[in-house]
Image 1 (cartoon, helix red, strand yellow):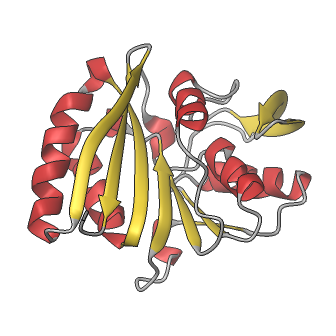
Image 2: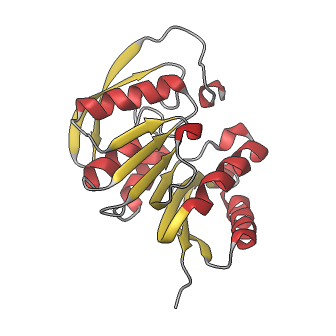
Image 3: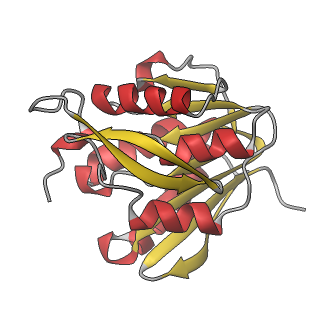
Length: 207
């Protein structure tokens, strides 16, 4: 599978296409395009994540790592209208589309930006992601090392990863990586659905 869409400047013309999708119970026409992840609709992993995880924090900051055209961030913003949603992607085309889709839905609580545009001091109450496994382990590990330690105390992150793309080995690595950051992280697999694992990371010592 071509993974070029994970990086900043996709080749080829920016030709928008319109697709019908339902997010957070709301049906609308979204804008997508070639050169981004899953331009034809909500991919299976994201669909499972959105169905299986609890609602995001009702207030505070919420993060979508690798937002693409926006299905996760848009859902977060609709479910938590008083939260401040940050939709992050390295792909400029994806960011443009995510912002357009937020405007289409009248969502004013989303900030769409490149990773380096997120202030370094921000912490997040909820993180959701369908992480880009196909960029390879070194780049994936670097990505998760950047964002997961930025959970607020009491915050939770949920990741969806295909079993056959290394979900179980990633779980093991996450436990080791976050243990080195601090002793207040808990990492576990919370469910498995149709070949996808949902991994939860919690910050805050459990009583």
